[in-house]
Amino acid sequence: MKISALTVTAVLAATPLAAQSLRDCDTFEANARNIYGPYAETIREYANGAIRVIALDVGEPASASFHVMVTYPHPEDPWPQCSLVSSEGNVGFGWLNMAETEASYDPAIGLSVTIPIETVSGVASWDQLLTITVNQATGVVTPVLSGNAPTPAPAGSK
Image 1 (spheres, one colour):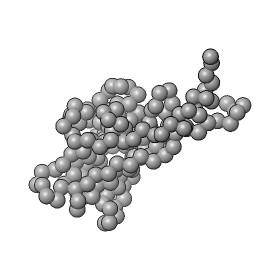
Image 2 (cartoon, helix red, strand yellow; image 1 turned 180 degrees about the horizontal axis):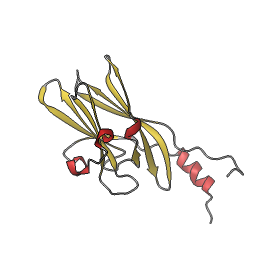
Image 3 (tube, one colour; image 1 turned 135 degrees about the vertical axis):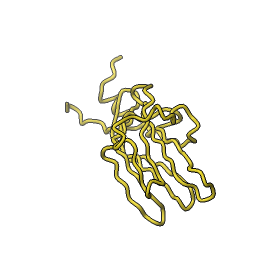
């Protein structure tokens, strides 16, 4: 039985997107040796250096090796907190485009940093946006993925 690319694309489009996961930084992924250059792009500082968003590449699996580490103050702790954002569990993203990272601040919710990413699932990959919100008042980090899986191509198109 042959399965067409259109069928694979349709199945992937109907599959829910992998959820992002938020973990503590006590993992091998959050090791300093996984930080990569150029550091001016892959390490971003906000709030006068109080919040750092750091791209990590653990190398394997090659199609999902990128993670994001966030260090930030907590209102009840004198030491910085650290959270690790991955695609799902300990699986990373296909790519992080740190050069096009954008940030905004809303006093009601905190700092929001948006990173264009590539998500890989099976044989398909697609672009999404990862928005990480850091609320310094509460010490809460919230990652949210937005974007869609590829949509099926019309029949007969290339």
